[in-house]
Image (cartoon, rainbow, N blue to C red; front, side, top):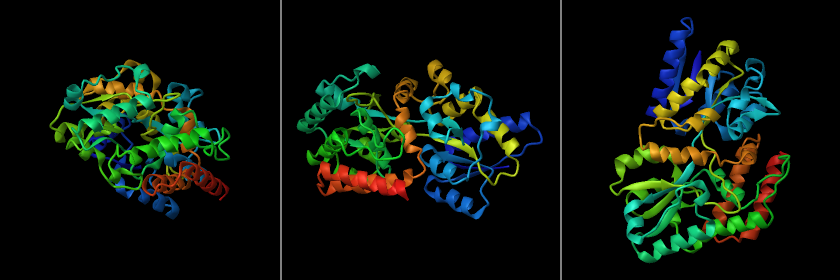
Length: 389
């Protein structure tokens, strides 16, 4: 049985541990783990089109709707016990569901919060939120950023990790009380007050020189490097960057919760594991899938690879992370603020096309000064065209 994953060394180690445990339990099973770098994701699409996809594949939540709607994945309904989904985070379960049926096993998630330079914050006397309910509002965050800029201690107050991942802009929209699509996911719903105000808010970062100009949506800038070398005092980024900072940043660093506005929201990250239509033995693949998603295996994988579990009980219990467990606890709490409605939007079959519209139009707003009103109208029009194709 073949299992294709995109993984870094820590993730690969976690997968091999699971496979070893499963093969010891099922002596006749043999799983061939195929590991690819993240920049070769197109490989899966090519193999599915050619009819030689692996039995199982690791798939980012934002691609689940595309593959499910194309008939490329196996409906898991007949392989899972009744109410199986009740044990999982509702947002991630929505991301693997198409037409009311599950097409993947949510394995883990990750999310984003605010990394900050402890030395700079101490020198400026900045207190950070210690709970989700105390997280900075948009206005508080902008005031704080202006204070950091005026101090001259860094060139830019912060940077945002949305490079080539325009979907990460969406949680600011949800924070404002807006949404990208209507509740039935059939039409755009961004050309309104919440949409325009969210575009204005994020556009102001560039207008007021609060973020490096090189960190727009279509940039390839690695903002973790800018943070590590003190170009910025903060970065809005994910828990997966912690090992990099441990090895690369000289100044002390810490994490606080994501900003909020009318409500709280953060990034839906992570991956599901799915059985492809080309699987030679779907029953065996489904058995491994359930093993992989079991509490014991999910817990061990998340500890090994520094990820956040998607089973409710594991989130409530907390995990014994090896690297900065007190920080990972903040990310785990932040992951509970991912809106289920946003996850559903990001799992629509045409989301790749929708994200391209977001990328093009937000880039125009941030880099060329396209007005927020025009940007919202263009996004709405582009989404309508994408959904009608």
